[in-house]
Amino acid sequence: MSSNANSPTATNSSYLLIGALGVVFGDIGTSPLYALKVAVEASRGGNTQLATLEPAALGILSLIAWSLMIVVTIKYVMIVMRADNKGEGGVFSLTALVLQKFSSNKNAKWMVTIAGTLGASLFFGDSLITPAISVLSAVEGLNVISPDLNQYVIYIALFLIASLFAVERFGTGKVGVVFGPIMLVWFLALGLLGIKEIINNPSVLVALNPLLGFEFLLQHQTVAIAILGSVVLAVTGGEALYADMGHFGRQPIQRAWLIIVFPCLLLNYFGQAALLIRDASALDNPFYRLCPSWGLVPMILLAFMATIIASQAVISGAFSIANQAIQLGYIPRLRIKHTSSHEIGQVYVSKINILLFLGVVLLVLTFKNSDSLASAYGISVTGAMAIDTLLAGFYMIKIRNWSPTLFVPLFVGLFAIDIGFLSANLFKFFEGGWLPIAVATVVLIVMISWISGRERLLSARWSNSMPLDDFLSIIKEGDPIRVPGTSVFMVPHENIVPMALMHNLKHNKVLHERVVLLHVEIENVPTILDSQRLTFKALKHNFYSIRVAYGFMEEPDMVRVMAMARLQKFHVNLMETSFFIGREKVVAKKSSPWHLQLFILLHRIMLGATDYYRIPLDHSLELGGHIEI
Image (cartoon, rainbow, N blue to C red):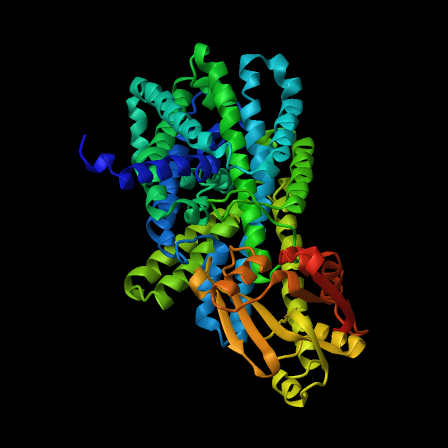
């Protein structure tokens, strides 16, 4: 063995590669459970009397193979993953990168923001459907053992789902170490099962010809839309390669895909197609029919674990997206719990967990099986992928200065594929496709209402506030009375006097001997170096302005800020420090539109600033007021 293989770098790279298998590839890695089966059934157009499935199996196999090649390998692995925001990926990271180009163009900024929030909204729809369809498809393997077990499928699925959501609050840190090895075994099993059938029928390799898929679509134009809508199931989860890039880095994810995941997926799909050519009756469940009788039960158990890991990964992704949205000011503040001291993206949001659990249970009880649920799957994923393509294309060409001559046609082609998949799935609207659209619409309305309402609220605060320079100019020696200690006022803007300070001065007639105006600003980057986090400014009359910068994946902590201030020679005693928090009651004007009414409702139920900024309760005072918007 070479010395490089034993180096810490090589060991760490191998660790990250295995870790990526357990987090990044769970969703796309469980697609063989249902993707080929659903697509072949769609191609039959209701005709169950076909003597052979060879044309359908080969045509759809070609479409799946080249969809994985183009959508996942070329688009995400080779192109989109280069659009990283200081190592982080995902729709909000991409949105933040593009927004830097439009800092002074309000209309363009709004369009990019809406695109980013729409992509995130579609992801939340995917977070509902993925656990339901993955767990159901795995448990349905019991039908292969005995049809009598079918009556227990829903109950077992609900038990697994309840167990999954119950342990979310503990985080993935303790069990994450076993996720990667389990998924490694899963992918190797996929490949080995496929190889056996390919050896028996090597002619199935003809499906590597991309023209075979196009010809099959042309020959089956009446069901071509249904076929494309089912083929996309094979690439669901491909966007996770980009979204989870910050956890493991670009190279480990790329290597895991190219060396392990992609080859094993192809082998399994080719094996399923070879089986269907040999035995059309295997269409009832071609994935489990690949297994020898002695391996069926172990494979079902392995599928249980793989689908739970896949579901857990997408649920954790929803928590991470919610956390980023809160930091960027796109949704109301919620209580965030960090579940890992090593991975900043591993967070738990209890309210999101409850909503997702109720939604997944409702889906299982409503659709009852994975075939029915497959009709609802795809719209959210393809919509999110199309938005990724648009934003990545703009960023690469306009900001990174990639050659327009080469890459405009490439991104146009990739976007056309996304739109083709999205359009095909839209035809399934009345069969269940309405569900992710409804979920995304609700989430989008909440986000846009919150963004616009928050801007209106901040504007009202500024219009009713006194400029800081004017306030300092009227303060005289001994007036007002200064009392011992330090007071800290949270301010939405560095150049205005906070309402809490004005209320305190009006009612108590005093100021502390040292007054700190603390402004927290969330930057359009994932993280901020501690050395760049605090900016001090000494003002007149023992007033100080402190600006605290956070990345959109970080969590504010005012106790830590005070500790960092002491390290920078700003001597403050926490025991003598009081935090004054403004807690305004927002009321609507008679002419306010409905979305501002929604904002006011959300504002009243959101997590308070004391909890969100981790301010010690015994050192905080909340002062109220009214603001009309």
